[in-house]
Image (tube, rainbow, N blue to C red; front, side, top):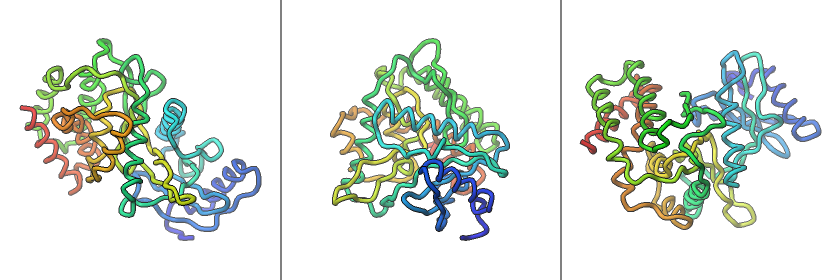
Length: 318
C-alpha cells in the first residue's frame, strides 16, 4: 500500500479492519488501497477486501464529524422514504481515529461516467424522479440540518411556508453572506444577487408541492453499478443534502458542473414530467450552488469561472 495517503496510516487501517470485521461477523482484512481523492473534498479511498471492499472518507476535525453524521442520516432518509439505492454503512458507518473521523461504506463496483451506456444515464434520471415522488407538508426538513459540500445547510422551515421565501432565506442569502465574507465575490455582483432575491416571488414560478430532494444532485453524486447478470442495475445515490423543496433544483444541479446526456432527463420523464418552463428557471436554481463554489474555491482558477457563471445567471433575470 502507498504510505503517503492519510488513510493508509497503520492506526487507520486497523480501525477499518475492526469495523469491517464487526460488520461481516468474521475477520476481514484489507488487501489493497485505491486513492480516490479526486472524487471528494475529503481524503478518501477504497480498501479492497473480500467479500466486500470499504469506501472510506476522512474528516480531520477533532470532534465527531457532523458532516458525516448528516451524510449517513441523509442516505438513510432517501433509502427509507423513497426506496432508492444508497451505499450500505459498514458497522455504524462512522469511526473515530487519531486523525479525525472516518466514514465507512460498502464500496460498490461502478461504471465510470465516460463509460456509461444510455441506459445507465437514464437510470440516474429515474432514481431522481423516484425521490421526487415523495412529498412533505413544508419546505425544509425538521429532522436535521445538513451540508452542501463542506458548507452547513439550514433546513428549518420558514414562517410563511412559501417556496420563494424558503429558497431566499435558507439557500441563497446564507450562501451570499458566505461568498461575501470569503472575499471572492465582487461587491457589485453581490448587490445584483441581493436585488435578484427580492424578485423571487415573481421569478420562481407556480408554487410547487414540497418535494423530497437529493439536494446536491450533481452527476458525480450518482453511482452507476457495474452490470450484473447482463442487466444494468439502478443508479445509487451518494452524498445527499436532503430537504423538501422544488424538484427543479435537483434537475438544475445535475449538470451544473459538467454536461450530461439528454438520456438523464429522458429517464426522469419515464416517471414524471418536467415542466416546459424549467429551462427558463434553470439558472435561478443554480445561484446558491454558484455561490457555494465561489465561497469554497473562489481563489482558484476553477472557482473564478463560477463568478462569471453567476454574473451571467443574474443578467438573465434582470
